[in-house]
Length: 237
Image (cartoon, rainbow, N blue to C red; front, top):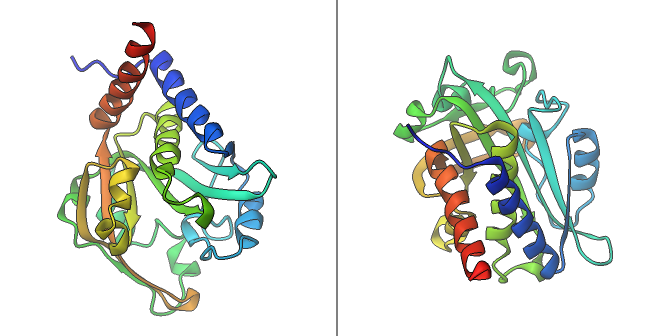
């Protein structure tokens, strides 16, 4: 029988990356009020608009099913944001979820603008089912880039997602430049496929062709356990 990571190991994992963020000059906060999140992200200079996936006027973002992480510098200014949500895909799969636009809208028929569409050409997406977590709306301020922080904030998100949902899969949708420059690798995802979400939302000025990146439940558990073991054993010895 598969032995998954324990609650204690998850707590140690989360704390280690929260501490890493503090050492880099970022203090993380989290919440589940997406009205507040949207107000914060709308006023960040240089950040692209938050997609419908994390807009409360578009999606159902109920407490317990979605949360956000905000990182502030020592002056209290926003330096990082990201958000996660959990979708129950037990009777469907990720490709169908994306193509139906239910990843964007609670009721696509009434909410999606004219000409809106999504095509998923990543074949593995049809095998991604069950409890599925999505990590997105990631932004890091320019002066904090190039310091390895993507691993820190993504690992923090992974740990919190496991603590809340123990998902069967966790995934992201990232642009080609993120793949080419190795940024997606820093997030910690082990798998990738092109054309995971070819999304067109004309009324919102969105036309993207993103890669699908993902981890399985087993891989996420192993990542957490391996990281905690590697961190603690040297300290004890």
